[in-house]
Image 1 (tube, rainbow, N blue to C red):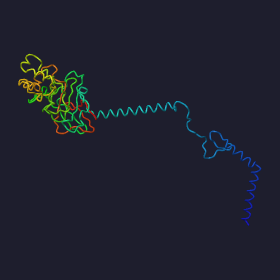
Image 2 (image 1 turned 180 degrees about the vertical axis):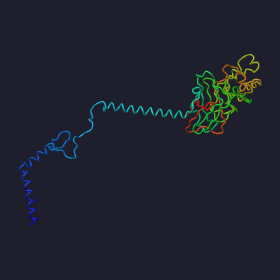
Image 3 (image 1 turned 45 degrees about the horizontal axis):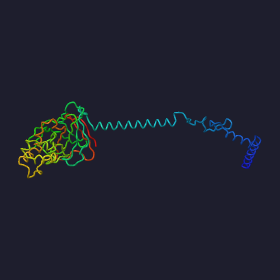
Image 4 (image 1 turned 180 degrees about the horizontal axis):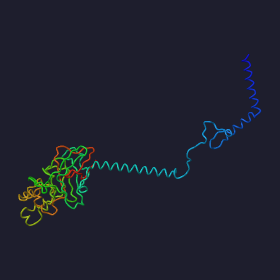
Length: 331
């Protein structure tokens, strides 16, 4: 009985609320409120009149407004990118400079006075062929003594010292060894192996004769005096050596002993004279007092039984007597 009374009471309350909703405006008023919500202010506040949903903030912040100002212009972005690229290049340059300084080592007071001139034949595997070149600066005002200097691989640690040499080399003699001093503009070929003539030496105008019986790498320059200079046409020479000797001398090649060119018509005195004169020692004896006899170039030999420098990549330092770096070659 009580349950039935409660059910009817609930029905009565629902009907009463529905009647009140109709009287107060009903669905029309509800539609109006919805329109008010749709037409809410631009600040984002959703409300019916002054109504705001509990989870909505009092105002909306949509972040910074992007405009056409210079701060965000395309030109400004380009400038920033250019500055970054410039900084990157500067960093790479400093990195390369630091690496080069480490490879170079402690600079010598002789830096810029003697240079390693290219790789030469450092990639060769035979010590008698493997070599590199040095050149003395033309700006030098005094000779540079390189005896006691050394060459060192910064990669392998191999180090060899530059020996002394002969200023007036003679074949078949014990040549006096002196400190090697480079005049301004002097060039040097430093070979890893031994000397074909037993010593390091300064080149001269007769050095080309040495190519005939020894092997040099690279070959010695051949600019010896012409054979005809040894037997000029004169009454004295015609009487001493004969006409045929004068004619043959004019046809002989330079820097070559003429043994294979002797013919029966040549007198014995002619053969003897040409054999003694047109040779390395004979040339030196005849022309040693000429002003341009000595050359501004050296052949230096390190007497190593094996190759010294790497065949792929290496850093070779030229060190002074104190172990400081005069120049470095990187390849």
